[in-house]
Length: 153
Figure 1 (cartoon, helix red, strand yellow):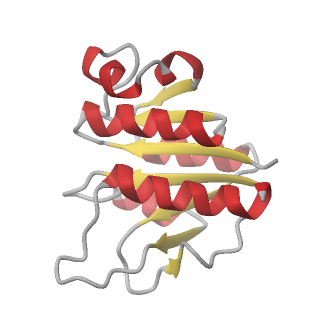
Figure 2 (cartoon, rainbow, N blue to C red):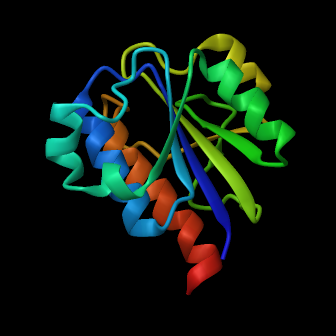
């Protein structure tokens, strides 16, 4: 089984953060890393959506996403930014490594520029609509299950 870490950069919504904790528990992620002003356990709104997952999934906090990315790279993780960039590789086709961290950014601002540059690669989901946008927790679900599919089925 692979090691998976989820990095959340400046997410505003405690409900999205709680949902991602639930996803982390569901796919067996090693931990969720919160950065900046992302709601961090213990947090009542996060707990409501996490439905207890925030109690069983390890959590770690870093002041910036760059701090988190640097730390994870030092631990041997391949760190992947999930961003809507033309140069990004499709997350559904990506050849994930055994030790992977994904970085999800603020829905309005994206991933902080320094952290984005420090990532090993940028992946994205294909967008077919006009808005070219998806909720961060929904995006996390698709990518996390794509990673698990490679190593679990």
